[in-house]
Image (cartoon, rainbow, N blue to C red; front, side, top):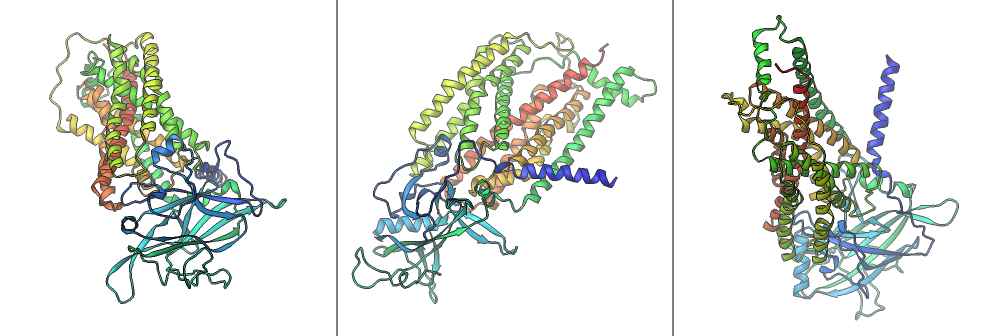
Length: 638
């Protein structure tokens, strides 16, 4: 017994190790770069970000120091959609050669520049930089745990504060940066690889003697006198006509961390126990529903085989009679059957995209070192999954004895993407109005439309052609010509009540993981634990399927045979709870005050909720479709 328990513990440990470390593998082709001592290290700047406004801006939107020529890096589709704007910077190091108090430039602020800096400081904007494909982080010690460090991505442009003895609040800029480059040295050669890029920002009012020129030495920060900046006791104020001198130090630290594991520190989840609690909680829901489905299936099929055993009570016989009585109407095509086919096809497209994306993530193809890779992969997979969307919608349409398959195909290809594109276009116009780098350029917008019309739409038509060409799915029982009258239903079987109740459990199975996903999106944190996400997605599929089957069985037992749309809406209603949770998250966790930012948040969450509705609704529909065909084909109808 003890040995068996030990085996189980080992299995769980190996599973945990796999799912927690699934993100440590790297995209093939992204190879490490070896640096010799004295090699030049070029720091690139990325967008300015804020959790208060959710509007990114390019680094040079603010009057920071600039190199002689600003060069834009080539960005992939995902990076552009994320608002990344990667450019070169005036910060240049030499590998393993520390530097102290390097002067970048001297700026005298005019009214416009001072106002721009103040606005970005008020909105808590952070500066993002990149070195050797690693993002710049600020290490912050956790007060609740000893020697525990969390990393903030990017450093704040500045801060607001008061001078001692003064009540007036001032704006101060972080104009002195102490960079720490961590490297792992090859024991067999003198080469090294960069495994960390950290910064400590300070606000320092630099001073110097005499007139400013190229050879001026600072008295507040002097490498010859070994006078380094250690605090912000005399901070640099942001005001019109104020002089700001930007400086930086560079330190190099040897590290035991190997290049292959350099992202582990950045992606370390300090609260992985919460993820396991979420999964255990969701598994309890699945076990409960599985038990109910098992009981329903065993009771139903056993009674049909035994054909009204005399030992059964009258109440049980009546229960069985309920769902058997509607056998002549249960496969009658629903109203708006073409719309149901469109939504089912779109749901299949979504489900395929998510499953393949997660497989790529588990295999390490969507490493965080490949910025924008996740969004790019999802867009391309969505486009190519149009083949399955067309096929599944056409197959269902033929089952409903529809004849205008081209019209249904057109709706499948355009309905969901057009709705999302319209919302996205309006939101993009708002971002463009704010002069944010997050606004998608016209060229990228054209590329998205080209992917949609040039690849997705033709593939939907190809899938529909083959789907409609195949023989129609045969119903297990014949449908009566005259529809049966549905008796008056109990209050708890009311369609609206039943649908709303059905969405609670699927949402309950994922809402804890949803918190981490929302945090990663809106609080600008990395989320690359695809192992946990895959488990939760499987649990979501099982929960949606089982709750729909249970409620469908109760519906048929009460002689209500209109199950087609209700099966879709039952699990699909979980999207309503997702949107309500998003609203709760907005008011409790986010500090967004600008109306445009609020519209952006709810606009994007509306798109996410709509997609979730299509996904969960399709899962529930197919589960119910399989269930009804199974019970009516496994028994002999008198």
